[in-house]
Length: 264
Length: 222
Ligand SMILES: Nc1ncnc2c1ncn2[C@@H]1O[C@H](COP(=O)(O)OP(=O)(O)OP(=O)(O)O)[C@@H](O)[C@H]1O
Ligand SMILES: [Mg+2]
Image (cartoon, rainbow over all chains, first blue to last red; front, side):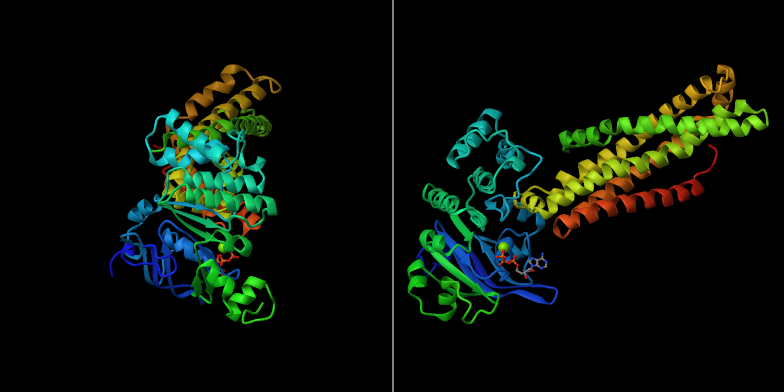
């Protein structure tokens, strides 16, 4: 088996940036991933949907090596993660940006310091350059004037935008969003979705992966949708495929209905 | 080495603990002097007060009380801060950015606690003796030579050093226990509370127990 790039994603026709091959992950007696196969196409937005607790967060934590699988392989470009040492994994991680479910900002730092943190840690840039980069991003995510605020002074929507700016500051190859709009009001949700789409469109080589429960946005911004069920990808396709699908699982999830194959 | 982070923690553990250490030690020295004076007075041996208090402070009370105070003030804060970072995914975020959380969070705190506990103990010893001196000279009306002669004869560098050595071990205990409890916090705000409480309980008990064993194995004289 060689790198991810040589495989073409059947849904988008783009080359694979990330590939999960038969990944199994168990916590104690609970099997969360049960032979997961998934291709994340390069330069596109892939959205992962599925019930709470189906292992979406676990899936994206694997791709950064924050969790290690029991079986299977995970390819990121030409690298296979499961055989890597911790030190090499740390290097792979620096190619990623991640926006955490609850932003995970450092609460001992200001907005500016939070966003600058990855730059300060990994790149030897003069302060003027750091300032220029960070302020450009602050403007881009619409947080003018918030430089010196600390996370406890920000609203949920502002924090997520700081999280996004921090994830983007080193121009990552991949960006992962864990429920970027959960807990935001409808207006902020729309603004965040637009920000995600604009971020992708401004960077043709960026690969975005989003975990979302917000079906409306999913159908709007995704290039590819993968639906997880019982530790596997049950359905994958374009938004059109999902809109048209008559599969009971898909219909139930899109309609948010209590009747169907998924039981509460 | 993350010098800036180490200095920041030294400031927090050391400098910011100074008021509570100085206040506690002054009153410990004072009350100890009051009590021992009354006892020695019965045998007209008041001149033993200075030496007794100083030896007890440098060998036992200084390191032990400083250890307990640092565990309560700084250890609890370290466990709570790291614990809160764990449950709000800030530690995952460090990992995700390719920054080793052990290097970034644990090592600076551990080093600062190992360095500052002996320093604070030295302050405790000094201010404790000053407190004792103040009570002896003031309310008790002792003379300067009566207070000092025995003190100078009895306290030798070995007493001070063995006390500081204890403090160093206590610093290791406080730093290691608090960081460990914080780092492996589970279960939201409740978990942070539990980690904080248990870091103080475990370090305090470990300080008192290890104190006995160090005293047992360290020779009494140089
Ligand atoms: N570190 C862990 N240790 C033990 N079990 C875990 C761990 N991480 C996740 N799990 C379990 O794995 C399952 C999937 O968790 P995961 O967080 O991936 O769900 P999710 O699909 O992201 O759900 P949500 O939509 O609610 O965020 C859950 O049952 C969870 O309890
Ligand atoms: Mg999740």
